[in-house]
Image 1 (cartoon, rainbow, N blue to C red):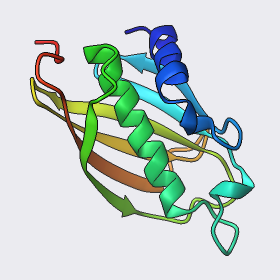
Image 2: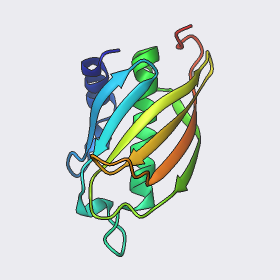
Image 3: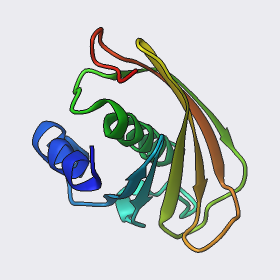
Image 4: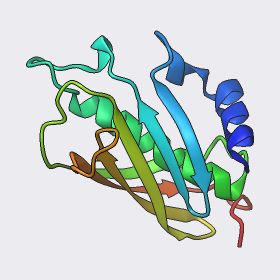
Length: 141
C-alpha cells in the first residue's frame, strides 16, 4: 500500500487514533518500514512535563501497524501480540518521531522494531520491539 492508501485505511477503519484531536501523523511508508510523528500535546504529558510512556507506546504500536499494512494491504485484524519497550532517556517537552522497521514478515507473524527520537535529533529516547499476528491468507509472500 502507498502512503495515501495506508492513510485512507487508517482514517476509515481506525479513526479513534485521532480522538481528542490529531496528534499522530503518518509521514512515510517504504519497504518494510514506516515513519510516524507525534505532536507535543498536553494529553501526552506526565507529571514533570515530559512525554508519557503510554504515549510513546501508542506511537510505536501505530508506526509498526502502518509498516505492516503497507506490506500486506488493508488488513484491519493484524493485531499486536507483544510489545517490549526500553525507555532510554527523558524525551522532554517536544514531539517525537518513530522510525519502524520490520525485521520479519511471515505468513502468520510480523516482528519489528521502532526507534523513537525527538525531531531533528539522533538522541534515542525509546527502543521498542513488537510482534503482530496476521490473519491467515493476508500476508504477502
